[in-house]
Image (cartoon, rainbow, N blue to C red; front, side, top):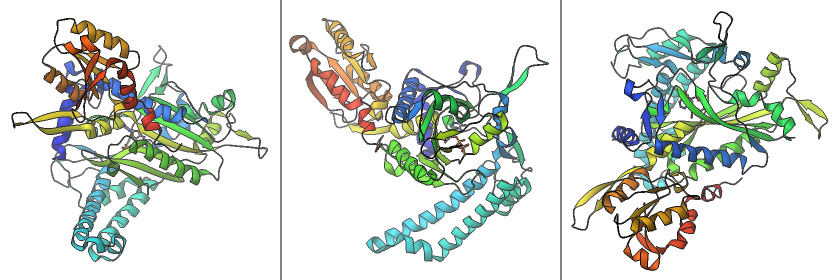
Length: 517
Ligand code: ATP
């Protein structure tokens, strides 16, 4: 069922100009996608929602735009050259390649799902008297499964931190994890694979330097920490936000725009005094979750997943997971990174990256809380939850399916469609007057082809919140029919009132006001 929905979302994304395969006429390039006329608008709106919520709503957060290419030593300092690896494993029968860590995580998720199923069943059986906490702590079968999960986790965390690839394979064997395609346990050894793309800088190949396409945008922020702090006269705590492309040579890239080789990130590094990291980590966890939930896609679709497997420098890390059509998966990461990154750059560059604190009269390397989210994953989250095939009753009693994208209005690619009822009698001219009134403030579409019903459906399919129909009465009294996407209700309103009515619905303020910044 969910699989079906996912397929439909992908097909819809293509049919209505949201997402195309890259270089499609050449049969595409694996895990690389292009955004079409509607997709690029939706993406821009997502970015604007994020950037404004950071920079406009916080006096102490500023934005930058750093280059994709960086000095190669940056990636040595950050640890990416040495350790930005994924453990890969092949199934010898299906010849499919997997990330060994993902196979183990999926296996754990299956056991967790069984626990949750038992809890749900018990909830139904016991009704109001049900005490979930007690049930989880005392039920034999649940305890057994939880112990199993803990055991696997413990081995996995240890093996990962020690880089013990033999042990990672052993976990897969001991847990009888099978290939989802062949169903067999015929695995190769686990190998490390570095995810960074490299290229050459300079025209003469012998002395050209090897450089990398950045695998994350965060390092561009760290290396500019002092530039921004000094030129912006920033005082701790303060943040630097940026949106930009990142590149990873992902081993497995199968889930549409969920895992791409070229993608876009929105990252914010918040520089703080040490000792404040727990408070700040909680603040950012709360705020980021509010940011997601403000969109109204359903609070039940989000959850935190705390990391067990912490990097040695990290104090805490959590993911905000979203209920994608293929289950709960990471949408955003929030990390408490101590002074690791700046200290590393200080060490490798030989330049001091410290903050002089006028309150304590001391200089030190600040701590960092990071929030990091993929634009494309956010796009997929919004698109998949907005997609609905609604069964509606027609006037003649028959039913039909209406495909509608219920985007949060602020994110909708097109805000209003302007539709003359027919192509003559001066209606197109009047409709263009309405377009001219609205086009400076809202992304509008003018359409005069096909019946009005068909035009409404096309706008529903791209998620346009308002359709404005100009008819003969408009020429007499300056009123139009305003049709709402979600309810399909229609109102007669005057043209002069349109800007205020539309603005009230689509303004980003509606979302920002839900954030306790
Ligand atoms: P995953 O475990 O799914 O590979 P990650 O933990 O490596 O993700 P981070 O390095 O924390 O991800 O990156 C931050 C965010 O960037 C992720 O939460 C995700 O939204 C996005 N992201 C990371 N890799 C990709 C990718 N290959 N395609 C699209 N978005 C990505």
